[in-house]
Length: 100
Image 1: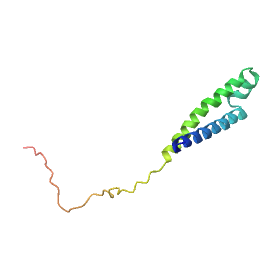
Image 2: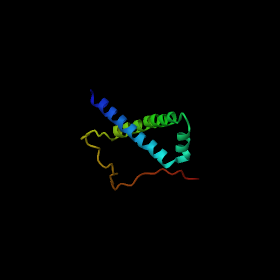
Image 3: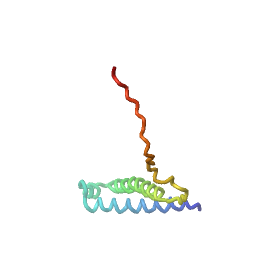
Image 4: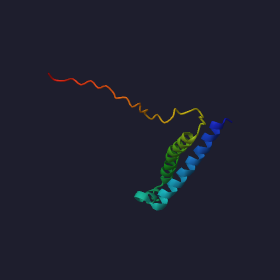
């Protein structure tokens, strides 16, 4: 299996793990009376499943993007110096339009 696919699968699993923790925290803290709404409804499990899946998609995407952005590439080429101006000591000519 290619390395990038292995990294993707690993980060998707991490993202869905974070989603499970997030949904559990939402239900435990009863944000917006969510636990009561889910526990008293006969199809509340669908709401929990939807919360888990949709948050899992978001968290997996963010986790994968974070890992890809942090991948470093070793670039040992010169960077071009500090690009500081060189002082020559010569006065610069400035044209000024004079009124007659």
